[in-house]
Image 1 (cartoon, one colour):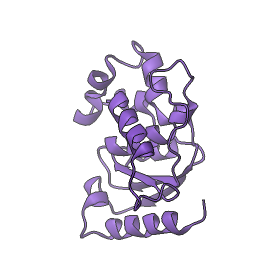
Image 2: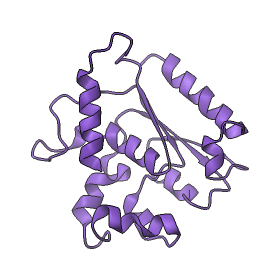
Image 3: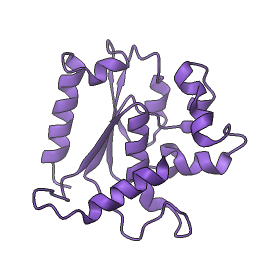
Length: 173
């Protein structure tokens, strides 16, 4: 999964499309997709001997994580149906695959670009502690929003997402 994401980002860096403004790219993702967006933005922190390293990764204006998983090891220790499959993705538990979790977890990689985390206060799938775990990120909590409100176009949460994306794209890098 991570190699696929890395290859996709690297392909975008060399994509010859005049309408693609490489100075105005914001990664956004929901839940596990938010985890991957945060992870992709932090790839430049990998050591050159890592299979996920690239010499000149594409740089992003920012990342918008929607109920994003920021601490993969903590998430894997949970017991809801989504949390319990994390070990399958990672090839083992955090205790069995500590290095993999360290390379895949945004809290271990840290913040390298402007990062906003939007979290629903009624989210039963990704706990608010995930948003709070990522030091340096701007966190916004929507008290009445559940996990899927963040991606449903007919909710107040969705309006907030649009506003945040517009803010991130209009700001100077």
